[in-house]
Length: 100
Image (cartoon, rainbow, N blue to C red):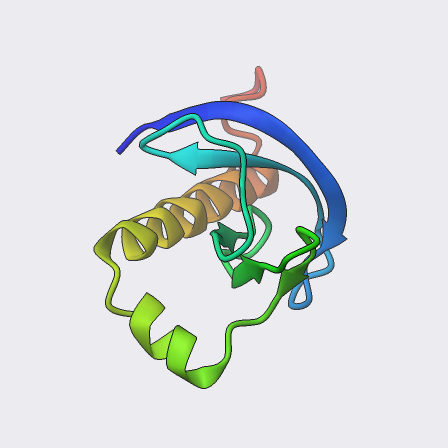
């Protein structure tokens, strides 16, 4: 898995954690997002889908069931959640900020 180029997109707000989302990076490619593409929040790993106007919406039940089977999405969510936990621990204990 690799991350492609960063692309600015219309500002959205994660419906789960409220994180500002104004950029997108394709996994394993460099394309800009298009309607129907999946987005994973970097603030909480929530899955959303770009609509026709590139606004994010929650997947419906059928879409969610399909997305749960996608190993690339699961791997990306796991890496985001791991990153968030490591960042939380670094902030809590000061590791990696000159006092470790």
